[in-house]
Length: 464
Image 1 (cartoon, rainbow, N blue to C red):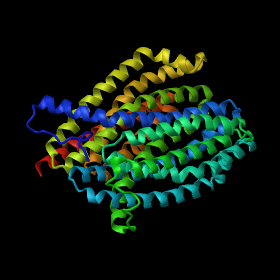
Image 2 (spheres, rainbow, N blue to C red):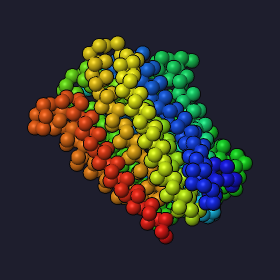
Image 3 (cartoon, rainbow, N blue to C red):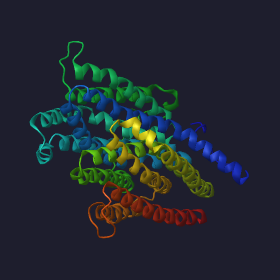
Image 4 (tube, helix red, strand yellow):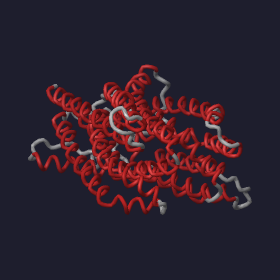
């Protein structure tokens, strides 16, 4: 394999030149990751907009269905995310003979995860009943998930194979097939939702079929590419089949389960907050959703930098370049903080303009503007914590960071947010802003603790 995307560092270079060179490598790795992340977000936007034009019930059903499958997928995707630093480390240490056996163990994990995810999604009726949905919305939600599950194996297959492609530094591969999935999703939604080409109109249920089909085609295309591309000729996926290895699978799960659980902790927190805010009325909920959507969109850039940082740090550790790994980990914190400050300034200056882009309702605009000001501070802490935790994943340190996130979010951020939102115990009840203050406090805690962990870890690693 060439060293285009993951060059071997040159320690004799001046410090500034080495830092800029590493940042350039991050950009080459992270740019395609960013595009892939945005393509995946675009799928959700496409589903929401097109289902909304069918009926309000279809829109609500697709939203509810998504809120059920997305956390599960992110949990399993996080577990499979252990493959990236493992394989990247093998590439750095030039132990390429270990790449395909590890990939196959990841595929076995993906197969079991797909079975579990399908079983759970086919048995969500008690959850739908607990939500007290009207009969039509519940019917469409269940129909949407019944169709969606056919694409779950393809979705998790791509997540596992991403460990191979990203781990080898070829982040453009998943970018291409994520874009393919998005481009297919738009016309397929049109056909299945509204009933075209002789297919009956399915409404929101059609979204599930369109997503399954687009994921399936993208997964087949990825398999075809990996078996025919010159870059992967030495990694013959089918010819290098290996049996399940319980010890190797356990090693992947030992690293991956904390990653998956950490992601699930974050996602479940935001879902819980949305439920807690419901009694405050639709105006407050809508304003909160706007602020959350804006922050989520801005978060895609630092998240992509973080994912690239995980790949690069694990490569450098495998290549026995701990000093460069330490330099990169610490200098990327400066880069990420600079990005966060720019975003914070933008939110302070253009909060009203941003709110008007989302809604024409003055009341919702007022709530969202006030929350965007809190969001400006929130995303600074969020960017710092994701950079620290991404670097630690590159060092294959995931268990302690998981505990830090669990403490910061559920033991500190959520209780504080609830108290500030609904009670007068500390200050007069703040409404939705209270949860944003609580979340920010939790993220500040996570940033400090993860930052301390990273500095101690990198110092110890460089002394070895």
